[in-house]
Image 1 (cartoon, rainbow, N blue to C red):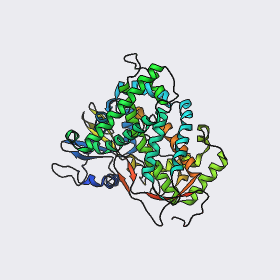
Image 2: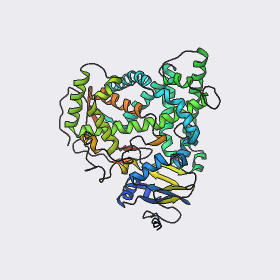
Image 3: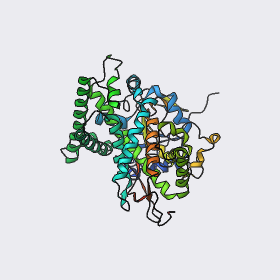
Image 4: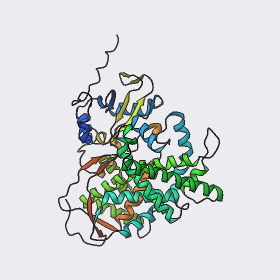
Amino acid sequence: MTSAAPLPIPRAAGSLPFIGHALKMRDNLAFIDSLRDTRQPLIEIVLQPGTRTIVVQDPALIHQMLKTLAPTLDKGRLYDKLGQLLGDSVVTATGRPHVRKRRQLQPAFAHTEISRYVDIMRTEVTATITRWQPGQPLDVREAMVALSLDMLAKTVFAGSLDDAVFRRLRSDLSVVMNGVGVRLMLPDWAERLPLPFNRRFDRARAGVRATVNTAVQELQASGHDTADMLSMLLRAIDEETGKPLTGHQIASEILTLAVAGTETTASVLSWALYELARHPRIEARVLAELDHVLGERDITLDDMPRLPYLNHVITETLRLHHPGWIVTRRTTEETPLGPWTLPAGTELAYCQHALHRDPERFPDPLTFHPDRWNDTTQEPPPGAFLPFGDGKHKCMGDRFARTEMVTALATMLRTIRLQLPHNHTIRQTARLTVRPHALKMTIHPRNHPPTQTPH
């Protein structure tokens, strides 16, 4: 007896001739959430005329896509566009080039290197806090973007650039990072228009490449190891040529790292600070744990596993407020997915934001509840919780990112307290990442008593 053919993949409601679901995507998070509510394992959306995108919603099928089917998939249009904007890098590469680039960069994220980075990260957080004025409102997301960019730039270039060059690089990286999110959503032809936005982006991108090229040439000429990530990248060898990476290759990796790492880290830190301000009892437990483990000393890499509750707070933030709202893949050949067979060239996507809020896997999903991660026997099934992706393209900087978050929160929370306006709720918006909109909080020294308890 032959098995029954699978049901056709349904198309999401609201598709219009010529524009597909473009109007629905004006509120992309609500649209993605509405797809989850259909309970369809696969559902088709149309993001641009002539191109069908299959949104994979069943965790088992997502797991199959990211693990079993990985050799037959490339990364899809989102990453194609990112490669066009920033250059070929480990984030945008697929197949054998991805494996090669991953091997080249892996030493930069080794335990010994991250241990050195912690001192740099902590120094940048402390310097940032000293610039904040007590009693003044703080645009939290903008502050976290600035902090994340400073931590990254100092980690990459700690000993390689003088202050003036570093400030220029930092400014150029900020322009590139803010511009990528807009350009990813624009058609290719719009990038060629002589608009001020395009010219500013192109100048900043060229500036980053020029700065990196100069730093590479000076380091190569001096033969010094400056104990930063740039020195580590200079020691990497291209497996195909047997030669060190070029300045252009290193600049592409740094540009992509800045965009992919800074924006996501800033969003998670912003949401974590928001939730801690809303939940004073959770914040008090974090502070008690920090006091017990650290006492009066600074945090180090060895302390990371000794702070389980703070780690649960970060994990719960990654669940409830994951910065990624859509991740793409594309079939390169006829590909089986569950009972369906997809033709070559099919765009696939999954959404961590919707996946992590599924009430079937996470009871009371809209409640911020770090203790849900205490019971290891209740872990979500494979494919249901993907804070850093999965499979061969899983984020290689996951440990680096978690170290940044723990270091930043541990350092900030022991020094300052951020207070929300009374009964203030922040809405989320999805651009390059899912970020809090207009999140402003008041700065107080940690020993300053609260004027009101946020609820």
